[in-house]
Length: 357
Image (cartoon, rainbow, N blue to C red; front, side, top):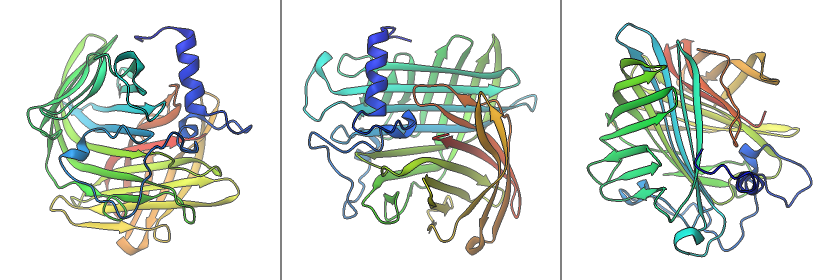
């Protein structure tokens, strides 16, 4: 970890959790429920996303992230999961340079497979060259974890990383259109309150390259999913976490289904079904049924690791199983994240994320 100062880490954790309410929320959701201050920009339904500009960062908003998951297969048939995420959190909205910049970055890296689950977390202050986002040619980095493209979009690009017992170099090609979730990228997160994010995905990625795990070099290839999201106050005070699924179905379509859980209230669901040619069907809360079937205790957390997904309007009925149970990630943002497989009306593979437990 580049910053090993206990004071710095403690300060960062307090920033994420927030101190304006006596109730302590999980840090995963605490930063997203803070009341916007310092004139941060707000997500509005009348805004439209613009590319390639919106591949870059949005420093006038409180939080954002760049997120990649991949289900990969080695030449010997073994299955591997890869997750890379870079977060940006603003400590204030006033532009400053160098060490005074309000932008703080955090990155997560996870590789899972036969060797177990390898994970790492890094932090950096923006403005000093250690982390950032460059528009042209497109580049996002934190230390030696880098996504590099030759143009002004992320694709085609190459993700390279090295940390302890894991390393990789993966080329990423987009084989479909971008998916703008909700109303052309305006993604509601609450049934009544004005809570939302700007949210888009690239669900149809093809990856190939090498992973190095515990000194063993593996040639891998497979499918990936890329998410981009930013906001200044995405969740309400009553919302406690979310359950999120991204799935490549065997008919060539991609399914995103998620729910945000609220204390003593019905969860708010949202999602989409999309195809590489650009067809997208938004899915609202009344169409999506996410039902936990069984729970497991992992690292002291009771987690729903078997699910049923029912979307009658799409004739989708899926049973969800995880590839590995032991994927609770004890980061500053703690959560469960890992590869899944589905069967039922369709077969497929993907990823699941559980937060706020």
